[in-house]
Image (cartoon, rainbow, N blue to C red; front, side, top):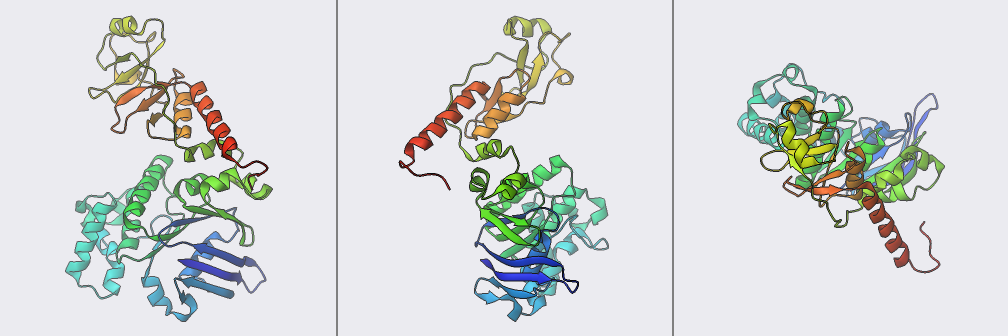
Length: 376
């Protein structure tokens, strides 16, 4: 557990970066700090490992006041990941990962074995061990940065916008990998981001800070989206927070429509005969996994990957209401593609069916609420 006890940081020119912050980051959970520029997110994070010293107040890690600890010893016990990985360019990947273990006195053989183990854990081949950072992509460097932070198995990790310097696709992949790792390791993590979508996706709880390092609200993502405490939080979270909130509601079992499908290599005549009057046909592979939609009126010759429309998202039968609604709205056929857990095509769903399910969920929640009570 990390606890901020009336923590402030004021600079000599009178600038207050953080003002009286009171907050607890629970053990084994991800606490995300988010807010506008100048709200003290990074300052708050860096006060935990004393890279910035608080002006007043105390920060506790479990029952230890960090100001009573040797700063170097404190930092060696905390994993730290920053933007653009911050790797040493003149050291190999393995040497970068082994930095803290070597400082702790591990022998080289043990430290290298740990580096190779962590490369696999973060989804990189062990053949990368003897490469240099400049030989890796941005996303690969970020994975190495995470591996380095995990090398000495610290109970606490601090992450300062670690995925902000990569493209959106890689960023989404890194977020998923990070959640997988956290599911395995259960670290106590404080994570800084300026992206509310990232905060909602990753955080067990999200702390919204005002300018000057004042805590506006701290809550679980679903609570934050559904019940912002004031206009500042509501505006920061965004006007589409109701849609985002659907990501925390498991989808009920909806009736799925059967769909005529085609495969790559099918002739235009076969596709049109099977589709009838429908202008769009779903293309699946040999294992009946969706590949994309094809406009049957525009197929010439045979169905090829070049004519596939891949813009629609795919929802899972055990996914959320947001997944289902997005699948229906993004599909060129206006029929959302739904797959089983193994990725096999299960059927399609229409947007109005999902909206009806949303209304049913709300009606059930309202009926279950005690008379005269109101959500706070």
